[in-house]
Length: 452
Image (tube, rainbow, N blue to C red; front, side):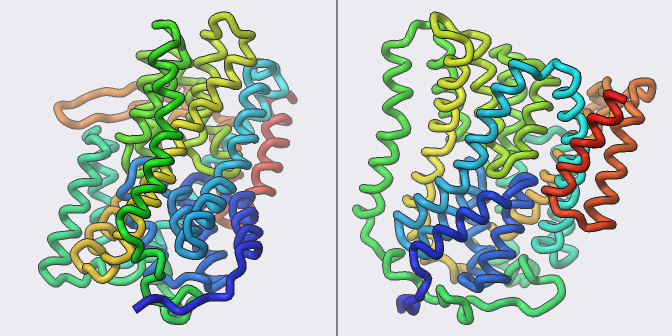
């Protein structure tokens, strides 16, 4: 039967999505935690198990899971217009901030005060990422089986350099087998499963039933998806057909469209591929600049994958053709954001109605819960990679048979970076500072230690 009607107005929901967008710092783990705290714990609009079901579905999709989760829940509450508003508002603050910071970076990034500011922000970012790992881990890893999946995923990527899609596929198959065999290790909501009472779907404003619009005929969802498909591919097709062969804009549109289709698991899957291709193949930026871009994205609200806008900006800025470099960079960044995020709405509106109907499928729910647990290990992998490259100026990657190790040069240890990171960790975990306050204090500290 259909779910009970709710009294959440569209205007009220829009205000909440603006609030979530402005508070969504720290990458997908932190953003998902913010959404859970506001939508489940505070507003009680959606229950624990439905929230986790939506999250697990978004983990299966290519692209940023946090933005897609916002789109999905917005769609649950207010149909297509709700999904569009939730997803667009989640993107907008980060897109504006990254564009402004990209301008600042190319114009003044090498200046002493700006470089010192970025140095301090990176320390805060590191603490935010580790805090996000802990927080999402508490919600998603409720037993030893889930911890084991996360540990195996971390080891596979960090030590064996396993392809991310393979890790996700293996976790999904493991969860599916567990569900089919009757195991309860992956049952129930990961969020709220550790300590306290689970807030049930039935007690939420949305209820536990399937909304009427989730029962829409296939042609209705296919119609929405068709419009999104045209909006996504038309600019890319025009560039490939009419732009010069060496046009950076054609390369940006083509590459990031491929990324939108092939990168599963959100921003953490994207970073390795984009970094390698942008640095080694396209030569749009250096490894250090890629790390700076990650720092910028971590210090702004919105999806961490917004770092791709910075990459596209630098690529076009350095290959402007006949355009002024700043205009080319701006257009390159906007094109990157367009082809990165438009497909995200397509996946949600095409797949969400069918996924809602499968909420009672135990094997599928277990598969998606297993993927959620595995992604925690992937988050930890990125956090450690970021820490090594922040604390050490030189980090060598060596292979010992199938095992890959990151070996930092002890002589290249930056004691100031280590000390500032320790202070930021203390501020986040011991003094429980808000991300805003921590970012501000670390920025000031970066200026002091680097300039004084």
